[in-house]
Length: 245
Image (cartoon, rainbow, N blue to C red; front, side, top):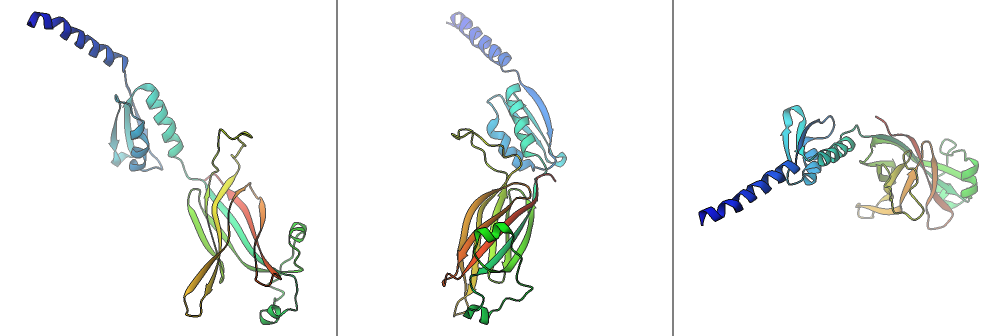
């Protein structure tokens, strides 16, 4: 019985040696400059094969990955995309209010001063037929791509959005456009803030949209109308700077 078992055991050992030889691994050390060890661990660990392992060196901001060469190459690509200085953006937002009449009751209650009024360009004149336009408020928002932003445009309005690099879709029927010089504002929301009779703060969504912006591009949006339909809001969004450090 023992002698008959020896050939089978030798076959098993030979198969194990052959598998180990086929699964030759390589090791590479990655130094992390901007991403944390925990973020790198979350990204890399699911990529490892059964032959792979990862060693963390938190004090040196390094990780060592040992795996099949093709796996290590994929890890290197992912970490290169992940470990970079986040791009920054600077967005100028202006909120205007236009009126179709200048001698109505609202004008007498809350008159426009010459300092409030703004000069309209031809595009604004063609889009919004208001003879008098006042600037309600403005804000310059800066931050890192991928982060959310919020600001008060005036005492009665707030703006919020998430700025990020645009998502591309390879299977789009019209093809994938070049989005390298664009920034996407997701969940852009303009909110009207008021105080109720009981003193509680009330918020009403006036505008909710997404948009793509090119460098220095200026976008005009009709953001809402008043109840008497003689006034309206105009939101102007302009990308002053994005990308880079």
